[in-house]
Image (tube, rainbow, N blue to C red; front, side, top):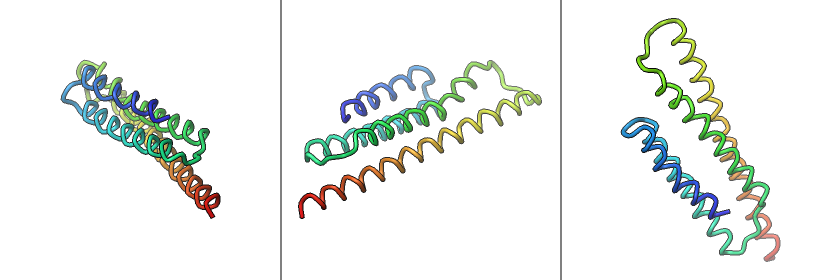
Length: 132
């Protein structure tokens, strides 16, 4: 599991800089890469300490965080394909739609963090229960 998170972290940052250098997408890509690398370290420590954590919870956590990342950064790709933004009514509707998509992305990311915290609490509960 740690390797999966690490590979994701290593690929997200450079890809975001190649697609849109010096933009909000590139900066967000680097912060997401750092977040994924942090989870790689946490899962590596859990595996090395031989703590029993929920593999299903870890996969759900990874899936929700990945889905949230795609929904958050996806609108940036759409906006980069539009040559010159105008203030027409269709652009306002597009911005509202993209903002809604991004909001759902943040919701999925927060849900992924909640799953991660739940999995950590469950892991701690199992560790305490089996050692006493």
